[in-house]
Amino acid sequence: MDSRNDIIVYAEYNEKKEIDRLTLECLGAGRRLADDWGCGLGAVIIGENMSGPVNELINYSVDHVYVADSPGLKEFHPELYCGVMARLCRKIEPRAVLFGNTLPGLDLAPRVSFSLDTGLVTDCVAMWIEEGRVVLSKPVYSGNVIAEYNIESKPAVITVRAKTQEKAQRCDAYNGKIIPIAEMIDEKDVTVRVMERVLELEEGPQLDDADIIVAGGRGIGSKEGFGLLAELAKTLGAALGASRPPCDLGWINAKAQVGQTGEIVGPSVYIAVGISGSTQHIVGMYTSRTIIAINKDAQAPIFDIADYGIVGNYEEIIPSFSNALVAECV
Ligand code: FAD
Image (cartoon, protein in one colour):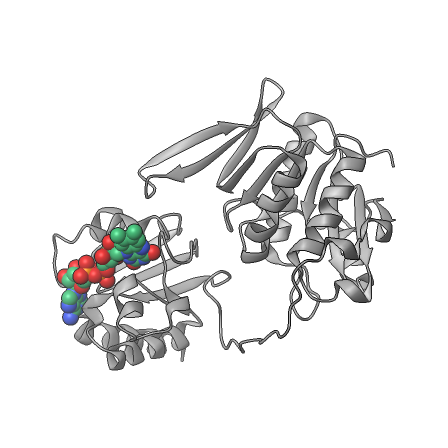
């Protein structure tokens, strides 16, 4: 393999075996770093029947696609997958390994970094090369400070926050190489067996991928109030989010929580309704392109970061907002 010093990206895909949007963003970031560093870009994909996603990956200016394809890899298994990643890294000695800041990414990246005895920075929002080394930045202290990191050891293991990087460009003419790496699978890595896997059906746009999010806070006051927000979300084709109190109070599923201990989102439009704007909430949504706040308290801190603000009772504002939207669309 002539790929020593590549940057490699761990590729994720969905149930339909479509490449994950965040993987394309990692490939975009990887390509920019690789061009600055003057090295190649690789992608690693692990699973069963991978020909579809492999042929898709190769179209994103990837020099090497490493494929571990085996029936034993059908379901994500952190120990098996980590074994494959770590063996590959020992063999090809990449400069950096990029993972999405997703549940599987956050499961694998620390294991890989520990196996290789190398440095890890999670949740990076920017990365660039300075004096031949990669510099990584991420928000810390609830987003009040942006910290910068260097990783001295090799490879630098990095997880990348969604929607912070330009996606890789499709380029059908690119001449990348597909490299099978089934020999890197070792059943002896497995100490924990998965007995059952339950897939929760998800309807409508999801927080991590939505272009528009309608989020409610304690000011919504009840489960029924969230029904009103759900109608607006449906009209807009948006995902429904929340601050922490409505999740704790059972007005909405805990998966809807946005913030420090919930999802980190960055949609084109974030509509915050009855949310005061605590730092723990803002850290999860401040990268949204346009923020619209609806709050009855004109002094609420959310207005400090909002692009548009409406002061008033959401129960009066949301129906007229929805009606205006419907009128606009018919
Ligand atoms: P409040 O601060 O109570 O604000 C409610 C707002 O609704 C007020 O501004 C009020 O004016 C407005 N309002 C009331 N009625 C109406 C109405 N009828 N119409 C319009 N506006 C109205 N929080 C998160 O969100 N996400 C996290 O991930 C998170 N993680 C945390 C982690 C830690 C370690 C800790 C300590 C806290 C965390 N929190 C998190 C909680 C956070 O500190 C705040 O308590 C929370 O974000 C406040 O939620 P809120 O804005 O909905 O409620």
